[in-house]
View 1 (cartoon, rainbow, N blue to C red):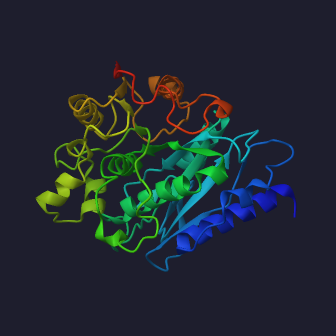
View 2 (view 1 turned 30 degrees about the horizontal axis):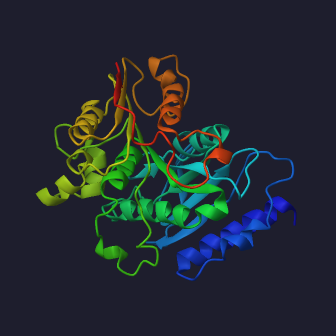
Length: 346
């Protein structure tokens, strides 16, 4: 077994113990394991978060898309030169797909690769969804998975070379809605978590990035398919309000970065509502509107102004202090976090 296999096996055991509620190995026990000697970027296999709702057989919905995900899992993408002694930023990534499927490649693994290229640890979150008529994809299931992912990464941060106050979220389309719920409902008590051994670990993201997101559940602005999947056919007004992220923003919300094309089939009013809610509460928000680009482009270059958003995202992360050198990020919050004023690009 080579060093890379030993390291990933150790990380897998750490997560497996944490998910099962057992005491995980002490961080020092993992300190003896080294990253690949060649110093190249690498990624783990899929690691269970201990949340399984059904004995579904995950399947490919179309090229690069999956459905019938019955078990919450994460995949870790480490940058070149990574060391367990680092204190890097982690980016938890939620692919879109209307809570029925997930664009696991275009809005998942490729985004994690981008994160690793920029020195972060990319964490693809495979949350529970189904394209059939069962309850998977309905609230609070996806939110439970998102919170579990954030808590698991934070609990194991010292073993993963991650700074516990540098863990953010990025979500696309319906995954953007999930990331927005995770960013606004992070301290909401959920009865389904009463016996969760990780429930006392903070699930608050330190920064939030929403890419062509669904934000509101208001019928005339939301995306109908996403709303029907997460809320069900006849939601109560209270549930609709809880799942409308713009209505749940408080002064404690993390700084927000938003991307939307004006010709998107998911109304750009979703992003505008989120920015306005953040401004009203004094939360830094950067809203990046582009005249064309449509929906579902991920980081693909399609010859539209939306091609520019990854560069804008990198700039914002640097301004917020989340892309500083891992050697200079030993504990504590990054120096720029939560201090920049909101910006708007249209």
